[in-house]
Figure 1 (cartoon, rainbow, N blue to C red):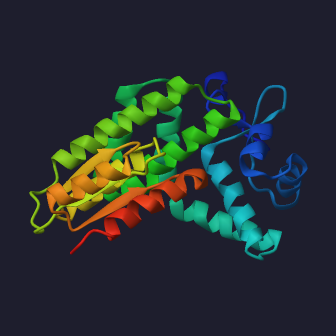
Figure 2: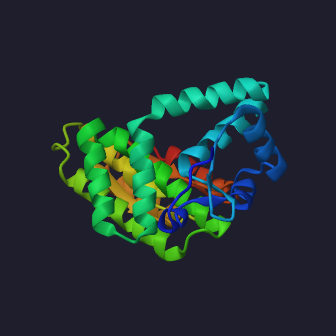
Length: 255
């Protein structure tokens, strides 16, 4: 029997059409997997319309990817179920974060991130909650099931938390800094900031330049800081060439 959800909870779940559009899986295929394998079992509205939680969307994504790699549908279901079992508390915290973001509750978002850091460590919280949450919020926005306000609030909560973790990192003990920058055509900095925290916790001094970093500015920063190297991020294929050119400019520096 499908689980019924309250009206408030339904607001945080995705309709089947949005899931289909997001993952590129036809709606009839999603329904067929549910009938044949009992996976996933979505919630239902009072009108019997399917609604999917983030962990169920992840399960469908995992099935799709496994089939692409050559697994049968039944094998793909087993892979997705094993992953769901292993995810455990991580999945629960991710769901809590997304539900809280949809309620526009910044204090609640901070509590989820704090709980994650205390229970599984800062870096696992980054990998298993913060970054997946931002990917999911972006997907929901594209699918039309959340507003820019929800995405921006979640982004700001994560950025504030990351800044705090960076401030709490030990004093750098490596001899040379690293420069971090987004590519010249890349706007989104969360991944870059998260990587900066990981590096800082490992003793690196980090110089983070942020979004839309011009190639000449990247070169100036590397030289001025006497950096050991630079990390340039690019999140979209259409902006990747500019990011590669930026790294090539750094690589061409003498010494």
